[in-house]
Amino acid sequence: MKKETICVVDDDLVYQYTASKMLKGIDTVSDVITFSDGEQAYNYLQDHLDVKDKLPGIMFLDINMPFMDGWTFLKIFKDLKLKLAKPITIYMVSSSPEKDDIERAKKIPEVSDYIVKPITRDIFKEKIKCYFSN
Image (cartoon, rainbow, N blue to C red; front, side):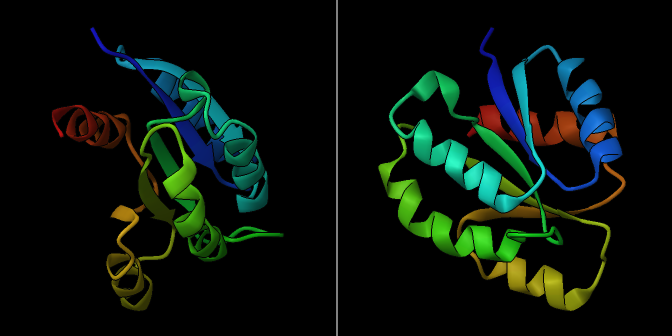
């Protein structure tokens, strides 16, 4: 059975913990890496560009974070993604069901979907299943 590393980028440490616990309980997840802002995630990806095993297949990216938010991360990710050893499926995550944010996310080709928190284990499973079926 194929397994994949999942990345959670969110400044809420409680959310990071609960998301990691839920994800680690899914049999197709090999590892979960977490970052508290977009800059940390970007630096990690840049440091592991060509190390396929270290790169996540899926990223759950929060919009509102200090230092570097999700929107800024996506702007600079456009250039970085071309250099990565494998593609990363990105899901925008927010507690905001605002139409403007949802529409903005839909216009960004790097974003596969927009998910409003709270995220359940079933939603995580569904997104991971979609990843493996593509």
